[in-house]
Image 1 (cartoon, rainbow, N blue to C red):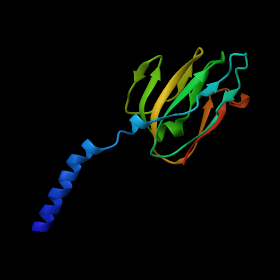
Image 2 (image 1 turned 45 degrees about the horizontal axis):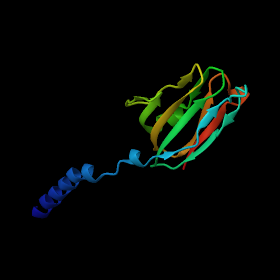
Image 3 (image 1 turned 30 degrees about the vertical axis):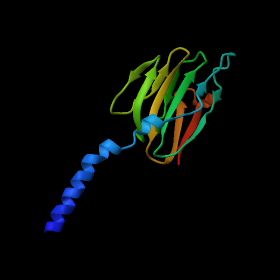
Length: 143
């Protein structure tokens, strides 16, 4: 019985110490190449860096940049549900929350950065709703 109490006490002490020694993954995030929708030369339907590879358990920052003059509605529902969002940054303003967004929308050229930790391995599709047939689709693979 004494050994059981000692083990319980040791376990409790470990739990109390864990937050103080835990690694903050968001401080060691990797900046990914920008995912760019459209370009400044008038081609609204080209995509730069449409396929992205990540590792589960690592933190990343992805800037999604609209350079074309379309209304881009960026959807990645399965991916958004399988990552932990640290923040969404728009024009140096941060959005924090406990759940994923439905989609990100660009009415004009600009950028939205997402900072996150990849959680669940898989291959996730992203697309710009209504522009899929024009090539505005890609994949985000988490290994």
